[in-house]
Image: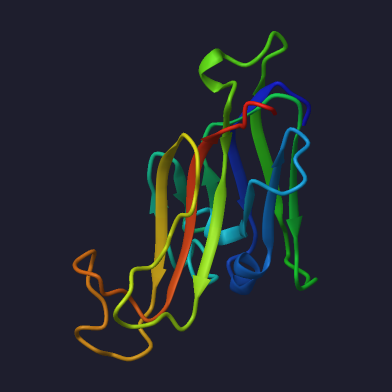
Amino acid sequence: IEGPGIITHLWITFPPANSFWGRESILRIFWDGEENPSVYTPLADFFGVPFGLTGKDFNIRSEYLVVAPQNGFNSYFMMPFVKHVRIELFVKRQVQLGGFYFQADYHQYPDGLPKNYHELRFHAQFRHENPCENYGRNYLFLDAQGEGILLGATFGIQTNEPQADAWYHGGGDRKSTRLNSSHIPLSRMPSSA
C-alpha cells in the first residue's frame, strides 16, 4: 500500500478446524522500505490467541483486538506509514483450508500524515520459551530502546505439571513452565529515517 497512510483495521479469517495454521503461519509487516520487519509473529499470536488455538477456543474482546467464535481475527491498532507498507503472510504447511480471507482497512493522507503520527511505527514481537525455567528468574518480554508507547502484551501460559504453585498471577518472581507472548509497542522512527 502506498503512503502516506494509516492502517486502521486488519481482518483475517480461516476455518477453525485448522488450528495449527494460526501458529505456523507467520505475519510480517514492513514500514517505509525497511529491510527487517517491524511485525514478525505467528498469525494467531499477533491477535492475542496463544498455542495455535482459534476463535472457536479462545475469544477476545478489547479495544484493540477482537477474536470472534467463528474465527474472525480483528486488529484495530493505528499503524501509520509515510512511504509504503508491505504485509506478508508465510504459510508453513500448504493445505486446503476451505477459505482464507484477509482485509486491510486504511486511510490515505495525500498531504502527509497528521503530525502526531508522522514518527510513530507499530511493532510486534513474538517470544516463545518451552520449557521455561520454573523458578529463579524473570522472563524478558520486551527488549526495546528509544521513545515509544507500550500498548499491551499478551501471554499464553501452560504448566507442564499440575502443581498448585507452578505459576503466580503476577506475584513475585516466579513464572510459568511454558510461556508464549506477543508484544505490541509503538516506537518512533530514528531521526535519520
